[in-house]
Length: 129
Image 1 (tube, rainbow, N blue to C red):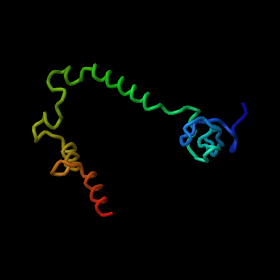
Image 2 (tube, helix red, strand yellow):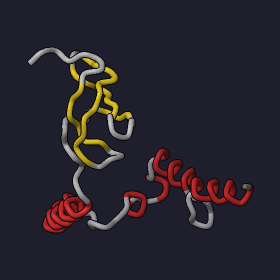
Image 3 (tube, helix red, strand yellow):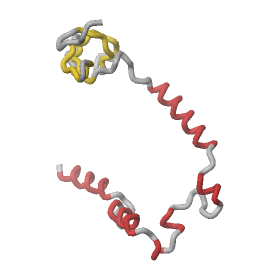
Image 4 (cartoon, one colour):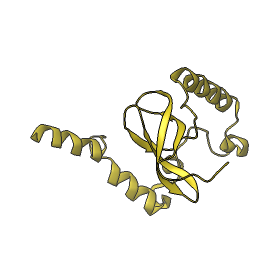
């Protein structure tokens, strides 16, 4: 096979068309196509090596299998026997022994009423506009 050049036509999966179509090479990286442009819809995207993304059905099946594997595992803390599996580190340590970084991160991310600061900031921005 000859070396690829800019403008060469190759097949790739188009994210906009959702099918395998002809694409023109837009950029090369180390002799391989990095970015391509669909010749049907003219959308630019990374070269996907003619591989379509998994369907929602496939993702759901994969998620179910992953959850089944996780459900069958024994938590490492339960093997030691001294810490309950559902316990939080801050709950198991006395207040004077809680690491400063953990306490600071907990106070920085959650307001007094329990809502995250980022969520409050987004709500305030929405009200202004």
